[in-house]
Amino acid sequence: MSFQQGLSGLNGAAKNLDVIGNNIANVSTVGFKQARTEFADVYANSLYGTGGVQVGIGTQVVNVSQSFTQGNITTTGNPLDVAVNGDGFFRLSDDGAITYTRNGQFHLDKDGYLVTNTGSNVTGYTTLTLDTNGGVIGAADLGNIQIDLNDLEPQATSQIGMVLSLDANADALDVTAFDPTIAATYNFTTSTTVYDSLGTAHTLQLYYVKDDASTTTSDWQVFGYLDGTGNQIDLGNADGSHTLSFDDMGQLSSGAAISGISASVPPAADLALDFDLTGVTQFAGDSGLISVSQDGYARGRVVGVSIDNNGVIFGRYTNGLTRPLQQLVLANFRNPNALVSLGNNQWASNSETGTEVLNTPGKGIAGVVQSGATEDANVDLTAELVNLIVAQRLYQANAQTIRAQDQILQTLVNLR
Image 1 (cartoon, helix red, strand yellow):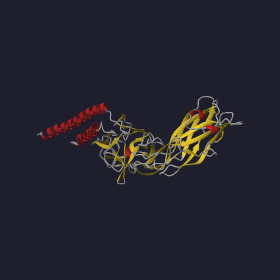
Image 2 (image 1 turned 90 degrees about the horizontal axis):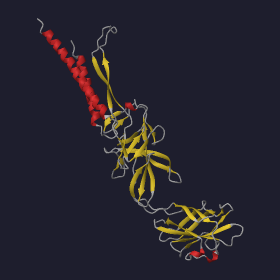
Image 3 (image 1 turned 45 degrees about the horizontal axis):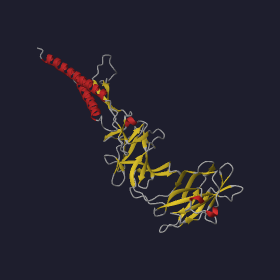
Image 4 (image 1 turned 135 degrees about the vertical axis):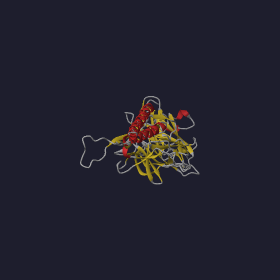
């Protein structure tokens, strides 16, 4: 007479109830992954092999496995809330101890480090390589992500690019009569802001005059003034102008570049300007400025942080700049189900998971990230409540087998 089967069934059912209860308790926990109890039957070992009438001695819990399926994405509006859409885990460091999480509820601490609610540092690439347009083309130096909260020092303008179209049917004017204060002496004008080494903004005004002295080509003379009409800057010609020459297709044949232009802006250092006018054309129609760019800026202070789908963290500054600073990484494993749960929505790797594979979001096997959102728990509450009822009935059924064994034993004891 044995109570082993019923007792093992009670222990297994109790463990199952614990797992289901934990799933239900964490239905609102960001990044939580539901678990399930896995059972196996138990047989007594036989010295000479298995008998034909061998009876099992109960059940046992062989594993509590987690399901790493995707949870729903909920928008929060907080730019430092980050959800993973696809495979991968955020990589965390707690004084050098590496853990992993799907909970992207991050914030900045007093030193500008990106941390979790439990104080663990979020790791990523701290050095970015940028192209000429400010796009990220490379990342290196894996470490704790830290946003520089210090002021961004000003940068003097050195490069100016302009794209504009000049009217091919404009009236040719006498260049020698040019006067920036008299609109009738020029055909078109553009204005842009440049910055000196102290971050002071200056207005650069360019005036375009179609030259009536041009015979074999269509020439325009460009005059430049800084901060008003009383401060002309020398653009190279004897009268301080620069010549743009166009062919019969409206394209520049010469004058696309102006280099080494110096302008005094005390108390700051002299400006040293290079102009790229490659995009200037001459076609019929009103003259118009299409685009202008320059590489200078005033002093700026961080006023916000945002994260794009590739995990690039951008800083927004009071001077209007938005600059890529650092980049998140996602870790993947050959066998994520072997990750060891540590609590606080964190897991640790071991020999069974395989070596971590690091990618920036959207690269390789890593999913993308979504800023201003979090990943909900992947718990199906309705299904778990049904599982709870089934587990409760299984517990009651195993209790009944113990009661039956007890009644049989009582009958045997009462025999006379």
